[in-house]
Every structure is written in structure tokens, then in C-alpha cells.
Image 1: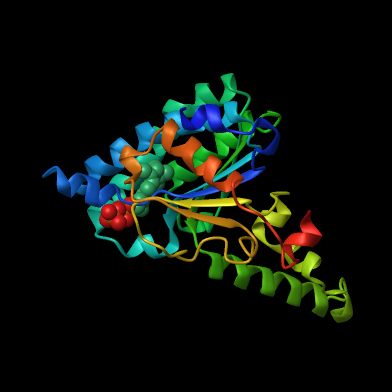
Image 2: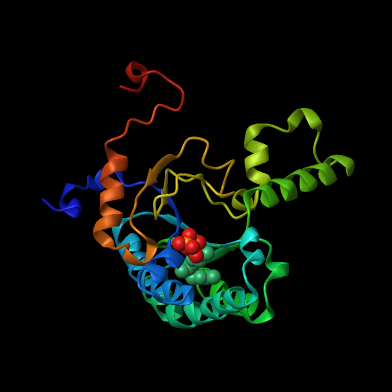
Length: 248
Ligand code: FPP
């Protein structure tokens, strides 16, 4: 039976976050420059957006470029920025057709204008779409996001807009970039290419997410790999700190 056939349609995760890793290694293994891996990764991204939208997942957050990625060689950074613009140019009509809303997370100020403009325009034209919400973490790191949240709440406290005793976990969540955009915590985090780390991604939000690591390089990721992750997720018991008996 294929993984697709094994999916329980009544227990689809609401929010899936993905770390698309392994583009560089995929290219190197084929004697190609790293950028070919990224280009191949964009084609995979196209297929996965469509598949995820059709599966019934409501939020999909893709780690496209971290704040730490700014330290990569200049030509790779510049090619990735070109790829980002090209990606939006190519996906715009698909997002509209598939009723997908686009959002971004991250420090926009560091992005070149052409990238900012392309994403902003696409966010604007898709803002009323009601299907999948596709979030690009671009120029993003979780510690940056948490630091921004701390500054935001500190300012509110200084201005008397929030009382220190009212700063609850829910309030902190609401003041993160994800909270401000109304994005719930991920249920499932997928990382491709074998590394078992989080790399500064949604640290607060994944407190109770299921983590799924696959050896598959991102450019080799496909629908069946995605369905396999969903089936694996559906076999887990999410206890949120409670006992198994309490959950049943
Ligand atoms: C990690 O692979 C991947 C990235 C840093 C970029 C992934 C993003 C895309 C393919 C989507 C389009 C890009 C943008 C900017 C919107 P790696 O290069 O770290 O691979 P390695 O670990 O094998 O070297």
C-alpha cells in the first residue's frame, strides 16, 4: 500500500514546518555547483506546495533562508536572492489558482528590495485566500524573533500597555512574529538530509511538535516522502506532558 493510501484523512496535521536541507550535498554528489541543488530544490518546493494544499494541511512553514545564511559566500547568497525572486514570479499564479495565502517571517530589513517587493506584492494579492497559508521563513532565526518579542513586550511594559503580572505564556506566544500573524504552533516538523538539529527554527513554537528526520536530500523530496512523514506522525501519540491513559 502506498503511503498516500495509509493516510488517515481525519488526522491531518494543521501546521507542518519544513527545514529544506541538503541542496548543496545533492549538487556536490552529482559534481554540480551548489546553486543547481537550490534550483532543483525550488522545483520540489512547487510540487510540495500543491501536494500539501491538497492534503488539507492549513499552514506550511518553509525555512528558506536563515539569518545565519547571510554568512555564506557572497555569490551563493546573491544567487539565492535571485532564486527567491524567480520563485515568487513562477509560483504567483499557482498560489492564486490553489487559493494559497502567502506570508513571510523574518528580518525583512536585510533583504534586497527586489526580494522584499516580490514577496510583498504576492502577499498582497493572496491575502484573502482561504486555503493553505504558506509561510516563508526568509532572513529568519528564532533567537532573533524571540529577541524582537522581548523588546516589544518591554516597550509595552514601559509604556504601561501591559502589566508584568499579565505576561503569560499565551501572551508571549501572541507577541512572537507567528502570533502577530495568527500562525499556530507546528504539529509536525520535517527536516531533510539526515541532520538531527533544529538550526534556530521556531524554537518556542515547536515545544510540543513531533520531529521527523529523513535522510532524503531536499532536491529528492517528493509527494511520497511527504505522505510517509504524515503517516509516521499519525502513528505517534501526542501526550503534551500527560500520561497515555489520560490521552485515551
Ligand atoms: C539548505 O541546503 C537549503 C537552503 C539554505 C536554501 C533552501 C531554499 C530553497 C531551495 C527555496 C528557495 C530559496 C529561497 C531563498 C526562497 P544547504 O545548502 O545547506 O545544503 P547542504 O547542507 O547539503 O550544504
